[in-house]
Length: 72
Image (cartoon, rainbow, N blue to C red; front, side, top):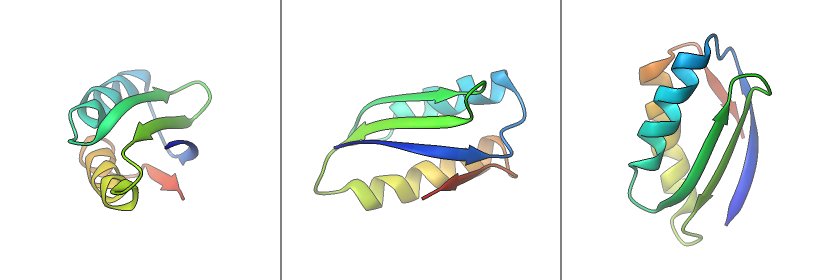
């Protein structure tokens, strides 16, 4: 499954790159792109575990950028 999400309060391109690298390491994630300019997350992950994976993605994003929210 591939989905796109709007991000809120992503403050820098470096943080976006760190998030993208960390998200790609999550088990079940096939591909991920975090765009600082567009404030968007595009993720492709296993259908059966998608919500569980997105919970992990949100945790990773908050660790890198505590104010950042994925609008799900």
